[in-house]
Length: 340
Length: 196
Image 1 (spheres, each protein chain N blue to C red):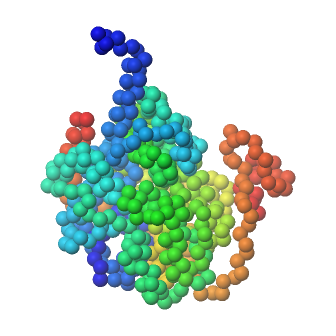
Image 2: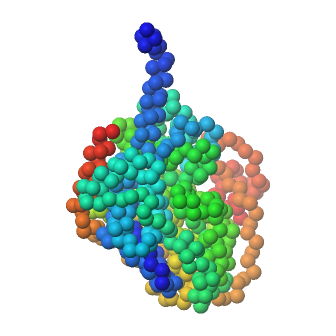
Image 3: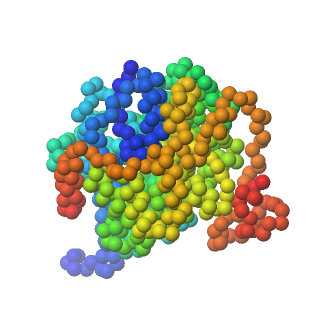
């Protein structure tokens, strides 16, 4: 049994509930003890740092101080939400890099009777813990229902592989860790070229056109690669692609239906745990029809269509030569029609 | 008598240095902004560069030229999606995303933003976190949409109902126990921020 401190983050019992439910069950199965740190607070996401520096970092550091106090034997602090993980890791690093910031944060923490020495807590993400501490052999040993026949697009998003303040990732743009994990579960893993592209984060809230276009690219590409579903490590990516897919379809007049689930949910399914207990069914774009393909003889997959050429929606774009797509006047064709 | 001969162009350059220093001082970590070699890798890596008034490269040139007003009016920091593509590709190791956060904070303080939606969202989010110690998705989105996106509500309603039926929306906010402690910490941090 390995013991870890656990920082869930706000979405784990809200919009990312399926993540929280499945990771608890999967960690138990893998013999990882996750002790939730006491009375943790929100990490401030990407909002607080854009308002005021010292309060934002004091907010994050309160969690680090609590974690440092609850350590008994050098256990790392694990987060499963990419934004939480990055904020915790960044605070730890920047308090070291800019001693002035570290000092200020500690003066502020002192008002609450807390203190944090940067570097005293090791901060890690759940995926990296499973890959390095548990290992794929152990994962394979737990698989009782291989995900044969399920075609998945591994989607990491941004904030886990980048900016990588603790240098844990060999590749920041095309890492293959999630690919290897899903392959160990028996899934048919798509070489998904947009695996670390951005879902737009809070853009769906503040500049919907920008956010929905980023979601469209991700979903469109996953569908183009004939994936049955996307698999993610981040609650923000999940809700953007899952819940905003309807609005994205309305915006672009498309009919995409691409489910997206958390990697821990698929681990649970492969470990033979109850699907419902893994939070399957909590997604708005239902993943259950795709999961029924598991174990069935994979149909000979049609080759993915050729390269996609879309007219740029931007009217300011330069007139560029286009591929022949029938006599569709440029700018009028729907992106999905051009491809097929 | 050298001191008396300081010419106006030197003063202008000096104001540029002052703004650059101000931005760096308010950035978490060491910004390395003065190291920018204007290569444009940042803008070329940016998924939302199309929607920006200035590419990051141009914005950094403006900062170094002391164009404070223009830089703080630019929508560029607000369009940054924090994907850190530019950060890992920057040959000079500039903390680009963190500089964007700094500029948002400065624009918010100077009230120089042109679209009130992004700072409005940040304010509501931060207000709730300061009060409860946790974020509250329902309260946040409801308030934000009523204020800024009332026309999007018809499209949003089925989604909100769907999320509610699947147990993904908490009606009431979660609160931490030691809110007083958190409030004291944040109050002290804000005082420190005022001093600089």
